[in-house]
Length: 143
Image 1: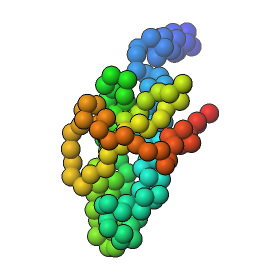
Image 2: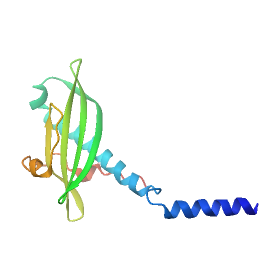
Image 3: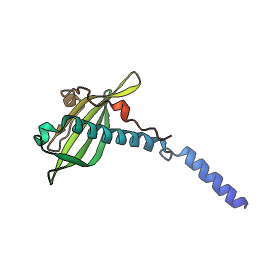
Image 4: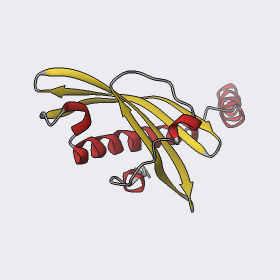
């Protein structure tokens, strides 16, 4: 019984002192991922993806967040959206620039393209976002 107690105490100490073992880091990523997915669904639906699918009916089948990077005061999220466009699968690639505005995250920049691309903050700022889908309504608080 004494060995089991020592072993449990040792595990507890390791869990509390080793960085990256808590769920806080994962929770921040999952919140960004959920917000990204909901935001993209809203944006494509509101604009009818007119510039991408030329008015054809479509449905979003998959949204995948690839990467989250931080440059200057912008959090850049990049990912892909797979859509079924009248029986044909098409993939769109997305880059979003999030900024903090008085403690809330807002989408300041957004670009959606037909081909995969790499983007830096200096290029992303050429695509300011006119707010149709506010980011704040998509935050999911799992508590």
